[in-house]
Amino acid sequence: MFSGLPADVNVKAYVSLIAEERFAQALDVIRVRCPLPGICGRVCHHPCELACNRRNVDEPVAIRSLKRFVADLEQELPRPSPPAGEKPQRVAVIGSGPAGLTAAFDLRLQGYPVTVFEAEAEPGGMLRYGITAYRLPREVLSVEIDTLARTGIDIQTGRRLGKDLELEQLLRGGYSAVLLAVGAQAGRPLGIPGEEGCPQVEDALAFLRRVNDGERAHPGRRVVVIGGGATAVEAARSALRLGAESVAILYRRYREEVLASAEEVEAAESEGIAFRFLVAPSRVITEGGNLRALECVEVGLREPDSSGRRRPVAIPGSEFHVEADRVLAAVGQQADLDCLPPDRISDLAEHNLLRTDPATAMTALSGVFAAGDVVSGPSTVIEAIAAGHAAAESIRHFLEEGRPGIREQRPEPEAPTELGLPDAPPILAARIRPAMLRPERGREFAEV
Image (cartoon, rainbow, N blue to C red; front, side, top):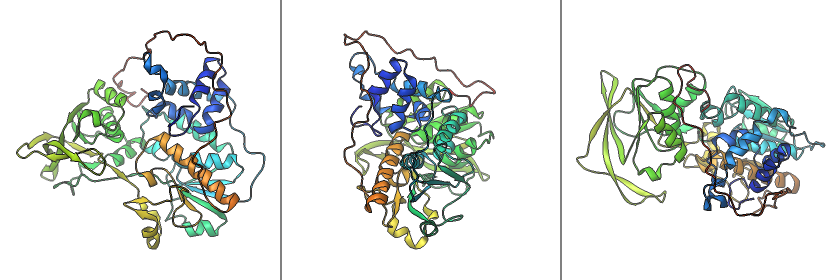
């Protein structure tokens, strides 16, 4: 196991097992800490590869791709079995994204009856509505969720907290604990003049939700995306697939500070998407009520801001126009907390995120826990999985001992750490990579 990785997956063990062609055992090892291997094998930002010693020789072992490989054998390999015993305390999980699904799976394997309530028509949270099919095929997502549900997890869709059910109702209705894992699915506005009331300027998350719901409307001839995170790149590549002639991403920092992974940026550029750095939007220009252009300014970076990164400052007199038919804002995400009782929001939330005790994952309400992006703000899939594990562990302590708690150090998973690999000097061998192809007409959202 590599130290410092979000979910503490025993990488050395499962890579060695795959090398020995013991695929079912490798998948068992992965699932101990990563219950969504096919998903993480595609969309994870793979911090494990940064910790791989092989990078000191040539480049890291393709750890993420190996996880994907063994997960794609899913239908031929054994699936997790329901627990032998059933415990009396029931747990409700609100939200079926990676944090909620992970916690539900952990608690179910411990013998607790778990019900997952999902507001949307299909489970998956941002896995389904924030990540497009060319990165995460829907059949893979469905197989992975079905695998977890077969342990006995009850997933109820179309059940929205604050509308179809209430926190107090759940606690009074026989649930001994509730986990809030509703994510951070609300985008932030650009906050510039002319934005409000212009229908061609919209939140990139809302745009992606429609695309992932099956909408294939033409986005406009010239699309401009504002932001440097994964959502910005995802929206840009989706707009290109929907028929935009030109797509540009504008970011107010240096290329090295882009929050999207380097491989996603390279993939976007290979598809023809242009990046422009050290610029920021300053005004939306309309004509007859429709978007005509985006006024931007060049920026310089000054002393660090609250994020620890240097603060962008507009350079006077550097204004310029970028013609656009559609602007997609991907400048941040926040939780939609309208689902909470209005009289409890001040107790539970701060800065549009839920407030928890970091040592227990419990909110100010006894028996109500929270995990994932709704607590941390937007993070990665593997970080959400790690948060789900921690919350499940604390809930288990709460149900069994009457007090929540998360262990600071977890024991090493019981699995072999190395099998039959030769103890010899490494052979230099560059990783073989498939060529990056532009989307084909008619198959734009096929997996890349």
